[in-house]
Length: 280
Image 1: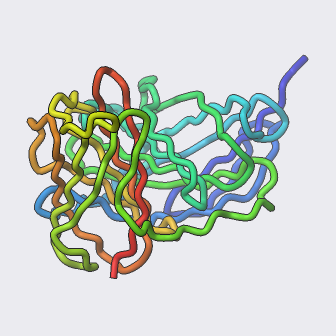
Image 2 (image 1 turned 135 degrees about the horizontal axis):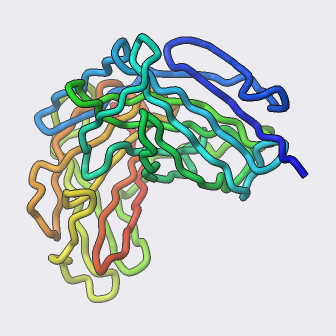
């Protein structure tokens, strides 16, 4: 029996819907490419969307995209002449990072599509619940500064009531067998600031000093503003550290509520620690 596929294609910076095949189901999508990246010393990445455009498609294993079912995400990188870009530089040990978040930021997934050649990246994943999800593709074509481009996808019913983000009263989390605290030297929009994570053993309370490198660094941190229009990717100030502290230099460009996900690794286990802050 043939299977119908849902194919949704978005060319960022334009609104373009095309049919994947004569039997494919279509649905309108929303695009939003307003975002920033943050590096040490607050050097913003240049989003050279004139030179590279990411075409997203999502194919479901059923007639419509459903929660907890396999979905294949394909990302085709082309230049402004619609020719595939074939050469990419590694970014934190990967050619492309894909951040998947639900619209209310309750769900976060950091995955790495496989490069198939001719500008095409592909990965099969699942969405955990109905609703809208935003996909952020982070990549760097050879000779072009790092680029982040985004795509909205809808999974089945979107009537579920979203979770409202409320800033944490205390920036402290216990995840599995580690406890992590977050501190800032100061917190204000538009200002350079130091962000420090302190990691201890949750049982013994002793500092953890044997963190393993994750994606070539002591840790990996992403922050997204509550409206999903601001994307920040933080780089550590020292890649050679192993704990108990991990320091990042950054700048939150605008006021608002942000959700932060910090990722650290020890004993080959990856920990993802969320925090919610309000930047005045």
